Length: 325
Image (tube, helix red, strand yellow):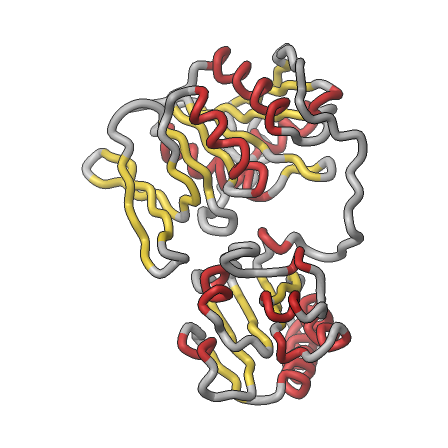
């Protein structure tokens, strides 16, 4: 059964987030030969439409308004509902990001629809789409089938591979007029902490530190390794609580949930709260002086040793590999 499926392209700092392209790949599966329509909401976002088309969208609808320059739940809800009412889709896909987690239940409520959140895989079984999502902090997975109504899902970053970029693809990028009014919240200015490197939630490689780094300076070897590997630096809650780093780096049940290709845990004991945020990483390497540390139970590779000796050695070896590649 072919379907029309909308995909919200999420924009950050004037660029599309990678999860937008991953959501298009998921939408292609759900569309089953139907039309995938990208949606852009913001101020001056129409120019990004062709990028969505290059990654598989058939066409793009943009809603532009200076009131949408910064995300607000009521502003984006009004804009997206205008697109939904105009397009009348059979499916909607978001990224399972902070924006997606806030906006998707609001839209689902307005449409009186169900919502499958945090999808990590989509399978086909007997003509039905089967959505796979983790439960119990990643200790188990459940499979859901939507038997009636709108197919509405959010996609966890770094789990469904995007389609190969094809710059020869073309499609229409149109503007839709939508009245955005009576906003309860108006954001005048956004002040961000200075950050460098790769976005943690979408990083393919993450080097994470725990209490074993001993200080804020203890993160420096981890940062150097992350730079060599083109990755991001993360942290356990223990490291954040000890003021070794900012809470924006926290990975775990009360922090960010990540699924990189490679996760290197340095000086992290492996508390259940932390494992909930990273245990689904494709390859896990643990570095810890304690051979009984719980992190080794989920690690694919374990190194028993002092991270301040091991990490610099790894950094030097990776540098050599890059030079010889």
